[in-house]
Amino acid sequence: MNTTAMLTRRWQTVMSDNYGTPPVAIVRGQGALVWDADGKQYLDMVAGIAVNAIGHAHPAIQAAVAKQLGDYGHVSNLAMHPVGIELAERLIELAGRPGRVFFCNSGTEANEAAFKVARLTGRTTVYAAQGGFHGRTMGALSLTGQPQTCPLRTARPRRRVLRVRQCPGPRKRRGPHCGTDPGRSRGRRGARGLSR
Image (cartoon, rainbow, N blue to C red):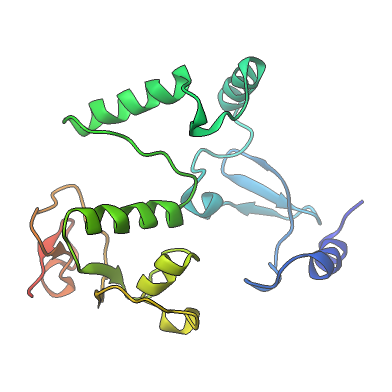
């Protein structure tokens, strides 16, 4: 039987120390709850770092995954497949306007794609949230609002680091410089235009 102490020793032997040793060793989950190797129960407030906010071991999700794996597993973007096309069509429908979908497997890839799109459209300034994490690629590290995490920063794009205290809500304003002004929007949802 694995205990947290045993898993800690094993982790420290084989895992990279980029985040340090986690204090918890999760061995199972159900809904929004998880249990560690010693049987202690926790409310999962992390949700796979906001990637899998679907809970744990939900029967409908287990059935959908099993059904899909019964047809085929991961086929990447090197082949067309109905499920990927259906998801892209649904996302465009939800967006309410024509467009194209780019699927990627990490926030870093999404940020790198955004940098490339910005460059292709002639935009030269990229905004980063102070204290924000944008990924570990060279491009994402050159943008990060955490300079202490970026000793290898080389080609830095023109960037502005903003103090942001809340996330923009559903009433976003459009414009060349748009984001959250903490002085004017504190306590209310929505984005406010930023001064140049």
